Image (cartoon, rainbow, N blue to C red; front, side):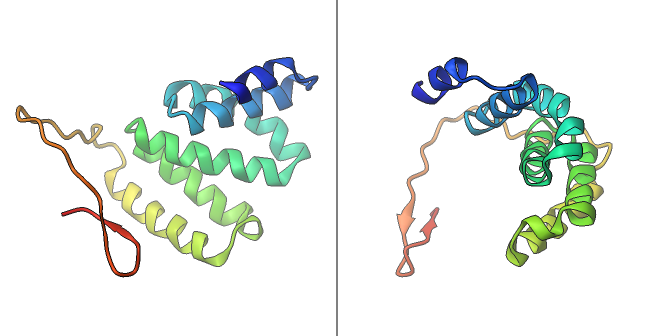
Length: 135
């Protein structure tokens, strides 16, 4: 991947490298790597770069959810709403609040899984408003 190659070649501080590697891991759905890297970078980011701290915390909230760590996800959303509100548009804040309340209900629950023995394919169908819908 070109971005990954460029990241390895870039002259960055250890903290910045950890942050960008964590964001890249998040965007490529390497959840466990993203969590480890972003948690490692977060304390330094909080001290020196509020915007990057907010981006990292948002990614962590999502990654914790994907990993079935609902309490950690709720905690990350709570921190976003408490300390980083000004970094996001108001529409995002409502989503953060909704997620916080949902994941609080799942706190302590085992990871939610969907399993089945029959394979199937879901094809998106465009609606008149061009929002993909699933039949």
